[in-house]
Length: 492
Ligand code: 5AD
Ligand code: SF4
Image (tube, rainbow, N blue to C red; front, side, top):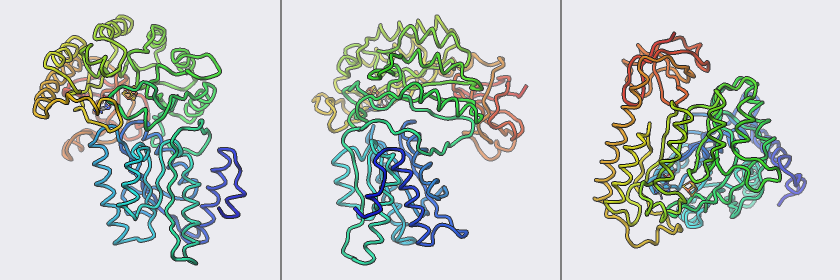
C-alpha cells in the first residue's frame, strides 16, 4: 500500500470518492485525460436486471473519473459483468474474453481489462481466469463492485511502479466471499432518462436446489426504505416516468431491517410519489406473495398490471425437490387471487424443463398449469447443472433428447397462450411509454414506415408512427393489430 492509499478515508462512499479523484489525477499525469483528451470505456453485461443495474453503477464511477462510453471493445478500459446462472451464460463470457484479449494484443497493449459479476464469485472460475488469461488486469466479484475506483487506482499505481521495477506483477484481484453492508450514494449512470431500475434488496436466501444465485449473490439484504424512497423521489423529479424495483425475491423485502416494513407497505409508499407514472417490480417468489401486496397493486393506478411470477415446474413433487415451498395448487390459487383483484393483469413466468428426475407425468403437470393459467409470456429454460448446487448431485439427470422434445412442446403451448391473450387487446386504447425509434424486431424496410416503439403497462411492445420528440413520454395508442408477442398501433 502506498502513502496516498493510506490517506484514503475508511468510510464509504467517501473512500471511493477519494479514489475517483486519485484515478483522475493519474490519468491526467499520463496525458490520457484532460486537454481535449478523454479515455473511453466499454462495459459488456450478461445476465439479469441486477447485473444491468450494477453496470450502471460501474459506469457512474468510471464517468466520474473522466471516462466516456463507447459501443465497441476497442476501448481504453473494458469490463465484463458476468452471469453464471446457466452454463451458456458462462460460455458466452469466455467467447468475449478471447475476443478482447486479441484486441488488446494487436491494437492496444495498455488497455485495461476487468472481469466482475457472478462468475467471479465462484473460486474455480477465478482460478481459471488467473491461470489462462494473463491479459486480464482486474478481477472482482458482486459484493465489492462498488470498489471499482479503488481497484482501478491500485492497478494504475501498480503499473506506475512496474515502470521502475519491471518484474512487478500489476494484476489486481479482489473477490469478497461475503457481502458487507450496502454502500449508498456513489455516482450512477442511468441508461435511460425515462426508465430506471432501483434495487430494493440484494441477495437471496431461498436456495432453490438448481440455483447458483444464493452462492454468488450472498444472503438477503434489504435497503432502508428511506434510501429507496429518496432515490425514487429524485428520479421522478428528474423526469423518470417508469421505475422497476429490483430484487431476487422482492416479496421478502424488509427481512432483517430495524424498521418493520413489508414489500406491500414499501410499494404503497412509493406508488404515490409525485411525478412517477409507472411502478413495476421483479422478481416475486410465489411462496411470499401476500394478500396485502395484491391489495396494494389493485389500489394504485401507478402500479403496472403485470407480475412476473416464476412457476419453475407445475409438478408439486418436483417443486418440493426444487425447494420452492409451494404446490401446483398454491400457485393456481395465487393466480386466481391476482386475477380476481385485477382482471386485466398480465402474468409472466420462468419455467425449467428437464430438472433432475422430471418424468413425463411431472412435465404434463407443467403443461397443465401453462394451459390453465395461460401465461402472457414465459421464459423457458433447459435445466443447467451448476456445480455447488444440491441438484448437481442428483443422480437422475434427464437425457438430453427427452429434455429437447419436452422443451419444444412447452414452447408451443406458451406461444399459443401468449398469442391468444395478446390478441384480446386489439381495438382497445392504451397508455404507452415511448421507448425507442424504429421497430424491434424488424427490417430496415419496416423501419421507414413505423417509427416508434413503446411499452404498455402489461410490458408488451407496440409499434406506431409518430415523432421522435415523443420518446420518453406516455401517449395514448389504439391497438390495431396483434403480431403474437407485439402490436401495431396508431397514435391517438
Ligand atoms: N438451470 C436452468 N434455469 C435456471 N434458472 C435458475 N437456475 C437455473 C438452472 N440451473 C432460471 C430460473 C430462474 C431464472 C432467472 O433462471 O427459472 O427463475
Ligand atoms: Fe435462485 Fe430461487 Fe433465489 Fe430465484 S428464488 S434467485 S431461483 S434461489
